Image (tube, rainbow, N blue to C red; front, side, top):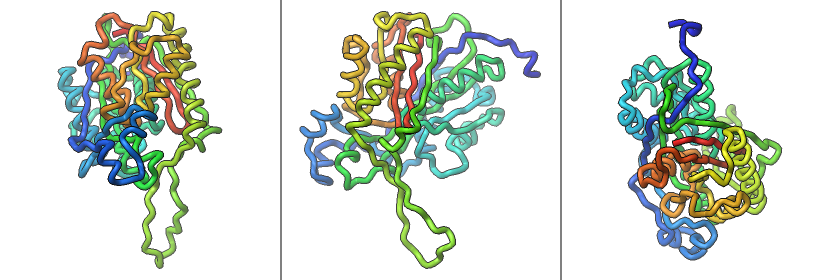
Length: 333
């Protein structure tokens, strides 16, 4: 079928969800044996009690498992998947992309596949990107995956960062459909590259032609927490306001907010700034910590499964990430 022959439909909806969590749990009490910290210190400052660690699993392994659940629930033949976008900053390697590894594993041989790098904003950046391809008529069925093995980027001697992160994967199927729950009403994305130093991955310079050195140095994440906190709160609150306006929805009429699960204090501050009761925010950070791109995808999955989101609800998905990046979507469930 030629591009010109395809019917352009304005309604793009999330028609199914999938997720995967590694079995290995790392509790605050275990971290007490690894670094100079305590369960009380971590809980009070972050809200985190434990996190998952992908022990012996690759990023692509988690992505494939989450994707399988999403396409099975959608009743979608993998051959009909036309687009696969993966939001991640921790791929198995520089290439092939995680999306291409997923394509191969699923047998989705007709799909275009690529990764999006937007750190914790990866899911919403990938979601919005996929939506555009469907909305303009280029594709009808897309698979969006958010996955990170962020524990690979953690300096386990740095107590200020190692307590924060965990691993996981979430996925959703996007389709051009009419009269469906999960309709994405609006999108908003932006970046603050000039403030990228607030959180970054440190990679020391390599000398590829130096055959004498045998030392291998791994990249690791560093962050400036106080500066990051302020920008995160302001950016997330602004993103919800703008996305709600674009959807013609009043902020006070949003029934559920699914925020990036970075820090409970950030979530509380965003709720206060938006004047939305914190009870409307779905929070699972206590179980998983910050799973980077996967956080919102898994939180959305659990919010729906636990019926915190009901048919007809207006849901705000909002995130902030390294880069710096931020995004929000309004979804009518």
